[in-house]
Amino acid sequence: DAGVIQSPRHEVTEMGQEVTLRCKPISGHDYLFWYRQTMMRGLELLIYFNNNVPIDDSGMPEDRFSAKMPNASFSTLKIQPSEPRDSAVYFCASSLRGFTDTQYFGPGTRLTVL
Amino acid sequence: DQQVKQNSPSLSVQEGRISILNCDYTNSMFDYFLWYKKYPAEGPTFLISISSIKDKNEDGRFTVFLNKSAKHLSLHIVPSQPGDSAVYFCAATGGSEKLVFGKGTKLTVNP
Image (tube, rainbow over all chains, first blue to last red; front, side):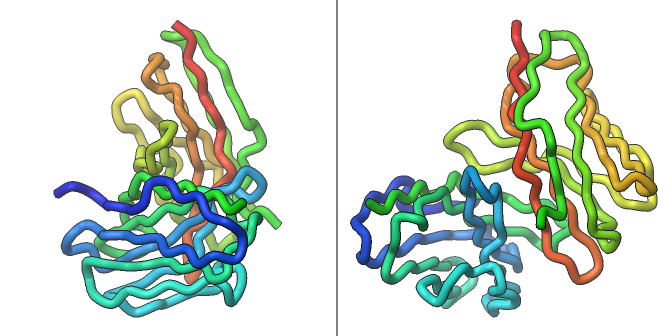
């Protein structure tokens, strides 16, 4: 398996624009996680899905953030409108089971909002 | 409020010596702990874990120790190698708690 795939790897956009981050989890994994890494807050869980269903989105910072998982092999994280404080590295991860199972992370998307 | 704390942002050791990375937690519900390693421009990768029913888990050069009464765990790397240079994240979960990560410790192993 190629592992968790994320695209794009880098995104530079201007404030107010819509940003869509994409993730393809490892085939057969039932759980998908979206994380954000910043210097100030470290690695934070934004939202996670189980069998394509969002389970907990309490980590999503604002209504500007939304995530979907239309099928088992694809998920998106959307920011609309984007703001400079959204600049961070966004990781997607997947696992077979829940939090005690090993999570496999993608390489991340580095987002810069000007 | 940080539930998982890694108080040392960085650590530098000589090749062949022991590296000790520390982690403290505050949530008594946590009963499973993991360490992840992260190289630049890559996602974190799982390293080792420990359940609260144990106080030690070993995997090759890596050993994790858990002191439940002190709410403290540590990762020992012996002997340290230059390839171990990375950022190490401590993470905890348990009960209905999600996985919570510390901010990481950057380890540099000097040849």
